[in-house]
Image (tube, rainbow, N blue to C red):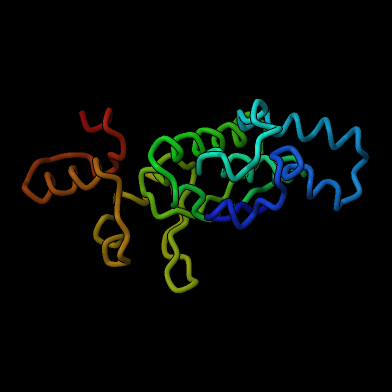
Length: 186
């Protein structure tokens, strides 16, 4: 399944539950099964109470969760999310990331998250850094973000705490270069 950066480019119906059902109807899924999957998908993204709402009246984070529900109703083994939090405020960003993590943890759905938010990337199991269509680094977040100079040469950021540790190390403080979380830094 694919979820785009702007949920307005993906939402096609005037009612939330109809939007989630859209792909299922096109795939010829039986109406009883559609009803079940739509409710399950909306429940999984914490949007069931909005099933009769108009999508255009929802917040950005809510719209993005409806777009995700439309994909998970199909029950894919993998979901690709193309910068799904780019247009969201911090609250909406948190809602979407929480939903994504739940799908991976509770349902075993593989999630490919394309992002420029390094704090989001730091929470992944694996990071693949690409440049001009080529894989530059493919490793755990700790290993990837310990390569600050390489990432900066690719015009990428690192999590704030990693940047802080990097600057302290440059000043002569002996620290582990694989620190990516505040608690580790403390």
